[in-house]
Length: 142
Image (cartoon, rainbow, N blue to C red):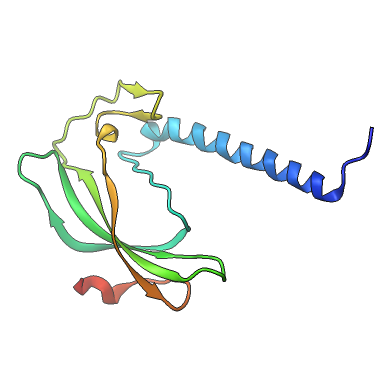
């Protein structure tokens, strides 16, 4: 049986590590109801090292959530431009009802708010010369 090359061994290690990370994420997500009051996850193309909540908040009539805006700063590779992302997120109101006894295996969610669609959405992008990894105070006027 031929011996694996260094590149093949590295690829195998990377696959094993990725599977382990994915499995640990699934375990963490299943336990979030016991750790946090609310968790909303959303996959981004690039990691964000900076998140700033904006002061405005809207409560749509007849809804059990508020809509709040935030700014995220990307941390891309050197080959891609960085940007600031203006986003809005739906957060349940204090009196919103969620049944913590209900666990949805298909979506790995518990309670009632997780089933809502469109909890997080990007509203706009602003190009930024460097990686955005500091507080974004000047955007409070947006």
